[in-house]
Length: 487
Length: 102
Image 1 (tube, rainbow over the protein chains, first blue to last red):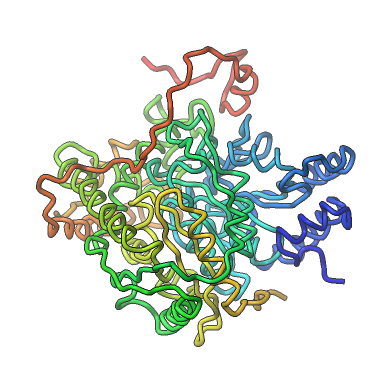
Image 2 (cartoon, chains in turn purple, green):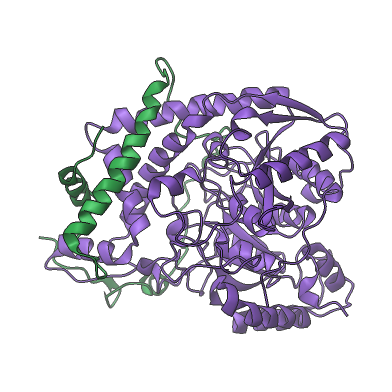
């Protein structure tokens, strides 16, 4: 019999729904898999085995409901930047090492209400600031395709846990590519919804005008199902939108791409891409054309300024958001000589170096004399980039781009901050524009044998559109199979 | 614009960070110099924004298109003090204990 943890989310959900397997059997299979793989990948910061077992037992006792709950008995993991009631939530930072939230994030509430079982909290770059998960205060995560390599980031633990079959799906957050990039580097599907589509209530804030919660899973349909559970209006997040939620799982049934125009922005397909990345992504574009899509080359002329604009704006927002960590009401307190000394000591010991760098950068950009030159200027460039996307998406149903210039790299191989920031060149434009995007495995790179991801960018609130396109492509692309890096 | 070590130290004061404190085996002065050089490189790169003409362009601070409707102004009791104080570094009765403010 196929081990239960190797099924995809929709498959196991249906088996649970038909009564062929019990929630506790599925959970035990996942926990065993987690125990076997965790020493190799370190995807999780907290494993909630006891809580998860109690939840599985409770679901079994209450029985399958009618109408059926969308995720009844399905084990999932959640990035440790989303608050979970009674379960430690660290943001992979020393400053929150012992923080136990008294409430669930909106998205976590939704998962639980749908009958899902949260089995673990996954690793990330501290406060979601990074692209490799190397900046976790509790040690990095390894890529299930090659455990000597990074899984991407910042939702690297979520992507690794999904790819390693520890769970059937996970939630991540995407501020500058933090769902799509690790999904791409680990061979998963990930969706960054439109800004405002999923409530950020209970998400530990990094860049509040960019942060968005979204799903990672092994198929497009699985991601669509998770998105349909977590999307929707929430009065507790002032940026949550009451735009109607579409039927994303129905959208995942799309076959063929006739009548669809897909744009290839030249800025995403130029120099800087590794040969294997370009080859795998171009092959996927050819498949889209074979499926009936019209392929159109377009330009987003302001996009090359995206890295500079993003790192000013996101760091400015981060410096403001992280001002709350002062050692007074929650989080690490390191006593100093006086009140100000306690603030300084707590923050200097509690924040890791990348968080400190971004606080410094943001504070500098917001400080008197530099505000207009950097912060206001970056916000103006943001408008130009958003307008570029809007114009392109008037002519095209969606845009295609590689997820990352290269496949997963080795830890410590990209060390200076500016080079690290430039690795986000292919993902951050979408966050500046606030639009939805999906990362889909395009294939394995012919040189490295590691996953290459393709992004599909859509119009605001057209998650259903990009899910449909991704679904049609997924069924025509060669599958990646199971990760080859695990014992 | 180049960023000097002195500017970085002045910025650290504004955001309540002591750059010399978390040395982890590294010489404190060297750490400050290293961080200053990194910030100088990053800020120096940001200057490419000046190549774009943004005269008469309105800044875009949020992409939110459909502002959420305001909530009714109704008081609600969401959490008890014990829950909120559970994460306090130091607590006495129903109060947070903090260093003297004045």
